[in-house]
Amino acid sequence: MEKAKSIKEIARLAGVSTATVSRVINHNGRFSKETEQRVLKVIQQNDYVPNMSAKGLRTSRTEVIGVMVPDITNPHFANLVLRLEMDFFARGYSCLICNTNESQTLEQKHIQSLTAQNVSGIVLISGTRNYPDLSALPVVYVDRPSRGPQAGGVMIESDNEEGGYLATSELLRAGCRHIAMLKCLANDTNQVARYRGFQRALAQWGMPEEEALRADLAEVSVDAAQTGIKTLLAHGAQFDGVMCTTDTLAAGAVIALREEGLNVPRDVLVTGFDDCQVAHICGPGITSVRQDVEQMAHLAAELLLGMIHGETPKQLYYKLPVSLTVRDSTRPRDAAIK
Image (tube, rainbow, N blue to C red):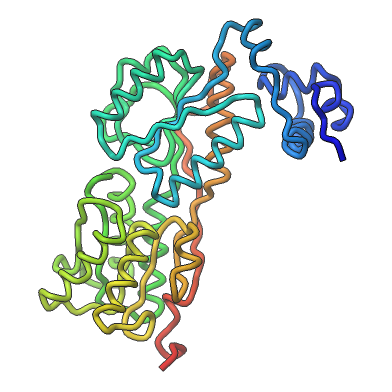
């Protein structure tokens, strides 16, 4: 079946006028949520790409969004960027993806490059906001709250503290009484919130926090997690559970425990955070805090495009709820395979 190639054909298939399709693509004007979803679905089904050259001549704007990501190899960020790109593309915008490698210097250079290219707006995944170059651009900050003073834009993040609480509570519920924690020092914003959730769960259960069981890592990687676990064990640490602040760290912890002759979940239970693909495929299947990445990306696109078209956000801060996906890595000991 031949796919639609014009805005008129998209309008016909969606049962709306060409003006309505144009308003949905440009996120400009009035239309119902139901109409928007119907039009976007037809656009996606037909792989329709608006004529950006003609549109640029009419509006004198680049239809390009800058997306700043700290580590594109991180499965959570890769998924988030994919969702953002899909949302923006459905509305006629392309994305320039900039990887900052957790470097504020590189972040600053990317921002200068994006502003020089006259992008329409920026989605920034960063704990830093004090960039003067961003003052004239619509900006949405995603995933990480600011380390310093606010500098405009909208913030969207998950309830990281609640996530840390849920992951730790699951370990305690399953019988753990000595819980190690792996977290990364490179991102001291949402990691700190997850740590607060860890502390809250321990306090609620009347369990002491054991400082000797906390490993502060320099980066989020499988290798860093393996080193962290093996260092704890080499120092004689005894633990029956590990709360990790990302799924990547959880995967590294599972591998290290296995290499040290310990079985998950028979000997040690493990939780992760993000509920990305690695949690599904890493044996035995990692219990993980699920962030609603699809909703986060969709909200970011909606807000940024609204700002680009002169709308004032109804609020400047959004905290999205999280949930826990339970898998075999926290199976109670009496149910574990012997």
